Image (cartoon, rainbow, N blue to C red; front, side):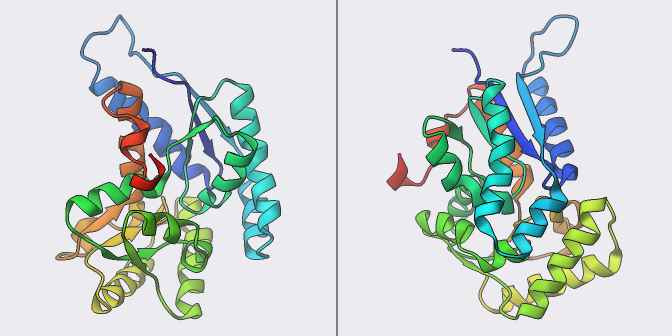
Length: 251
């Protein structure tokens, strides 16, 4: 059976989209031993939306406009033949219910499903979750993780959430990685560990470009984008099926 045409929704921000396109292609090539004169690239369509408008709607909590903004990109992907959607962002998964309503037959590889599996395999049930303020405030990722039996802990005070969001929006989204910001995020992760977190999800796809396991020894870090990229490549290679990632109640 031919691999599905993969659609990548990016621009949220563009930095993670670059990593997704590069990472998926490299993993598919590395696992395809026989090829012709050129590398056997998978069939991928990518659409980038306006990150500034997207964050503006998010900040105002105008989630209907967030959905519509992201749906404009998804519609382009579907028109281009997308059969499997990968959203290159944790936060942008807020639009998944709206996408499913408009395109009920479109397959979606949900980022939370991709890191829930490794968490369950390691026996973790209470985990830290850091990311954008919407990811920490709203329930779209928390509820998905709950379907897997995982309880996420997020920073409790709004000032800390605002601080992390500022780092993501004003630094990481511009490929600007600062030691002071890394140190602050490590402090936040350690505070979640003190509250009982057995691991910590780096729940913004840019965070794992700033923080690696060596920066937080002794507490497993869960790189959301890396696991999402690996899962997408494995689906394209036919190593796994989309249903393998779904919560048991959705299979």
